[in-house]
Image (cartoon, rainbow, N blue to C red; front, side, top):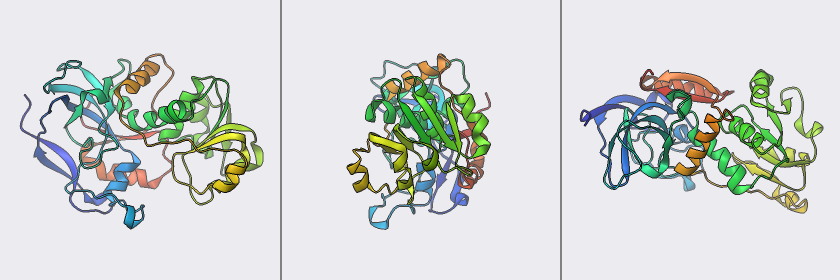
Length: 325
């Protein structure tokens, strides 16, 4: 059994990146149906910085209650260090990755740490051909894309898909996963991401800084909008009658007008799912899916990683490296 303490990143008060403290904490123990993971890499996701601010981006009456101290992080890749009672599918030494306990909050993944526990059913075997940094960049963003495409929209082959914010975490996985259904993919991002997205397989790239998407695109079957915002309704003209808009981030879409056009809004909250993680791993092994890595920071530099996240214009994922592989 490993030592009884570990290093983790926690917050004791809400605020900016500076509230993230790198400190020694007790080592967790796996309960029934759980494993203990020696984390090699963890990934930043928007819920991490929403929680760090006390969900300041949510109206006060709707804010979740977060118990402090709090350890952020739900995306992890690492090695099983111990197994709890009733676990039969994993053994010590197995390399695993997954989205841990999401969307639970106070009993969440606690991934900004040297170790964490995870329900065995939330994990999949890490693809052998990638390292832990690349694997950690996959879970939440790729599961969000997967569940939007295949659980909510139920994407059929040969459709036209537009991804707004295509270079970001969820966006670049939407591009790749839609391609597995032979979709015609239109990717929208700033010009600096053009080569990245063409390499991922977009059929058409639109630089929103120089071209208004709504002026040049029509008859899209499915729009996935990772940007949202108060002016999201400007994208209504690009969607065909009877098409769909899936907001990954909240936006104002003039839904009454959308209803007149037969446009629906399939969406849902991403959730942990080990079986779907295994399917993502299969796609990685087949060369059909990869995580774009924007930047990598040591665990102790989590505040700097959050500063990078807040700077925006991210290409892929930001990862915290716990162990150098």
